[in-house]
Length: 337
Image 1 (cartoon, rainbow, N blue to C red):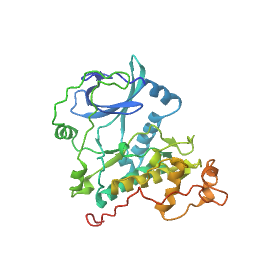
Image 2 (cartoon, rainbow, N blue to C red):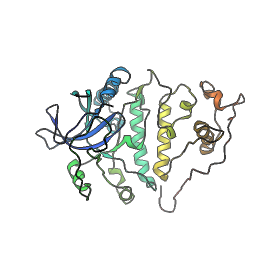
Image 3 (cartoon, rainbow, N blue to C red):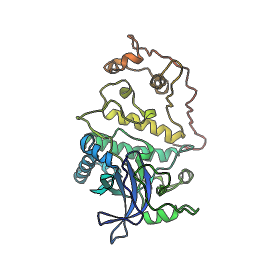
Image 4 (cartoon, helix red, strand yellow):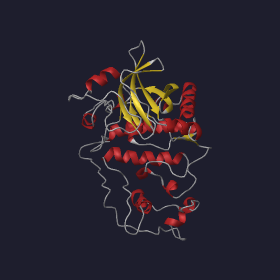
């Protein structure tokens, strides 16, 4: 709890004027602001009072962002161009307490994938995200831990034009103040939609698309403390489920699952529990089928949860039904590599 009570037209840090709300998560809200005396837009992520306190004690999102920014300035690694840049940071006070504000370049949201995207486009996105991860892993020595479509943004050539083009046609008259708790009447979240999924299907010059990775709220240092649980559940790597020591490879697994989703419009895994099995057991049991090979249990035996899911011979205890809920769409008829 403890959301910043933002008001349309309000000024922040005497520099930024609020234009509209872009979105809200569990621990923060994101706003579009105009820079004072400049025709320039930025996105400001305002942490809740609680998240700000936790950030100081348990997380270090600001520290990671500053480290990435400083390393990017000195680096020639192509991946640094695919990380959303931190432009400024400061704290503000409200009746809820102190709020950390993180200022980033304004960007558009990645389109919702309903039917899959063209293979050439997915190749562009995958390459850029792999470059971003390579920069994070090898030059910044950190693991992102939370790759998902919401954390992939699209670079805008002209923010003002994008906003005007994508304004909703229906009239919206929001309330002027956002309450400190998740409100029933509030400023509506209106992210910057760059283009729809259908428009992406009709794009010819895919090379013009530039995506960037954002949100370092759960990032960790490769050599630092690693929590037991990371990643969205359906995108979770096997080493995380099994309680092994994990590292950069968890991000790569995460991205591979996303690439499947971009290509097909479906999740690669849909973990769910049943009468005699857990969602984790279901998840693990379907991994060999999708990978086309059995688990190499030499590494996984080191996991503290190995005994929950495997017997002493290295065989999965729970054998589930064959894959019926994952539909692999090759789509060779409509797309070419």
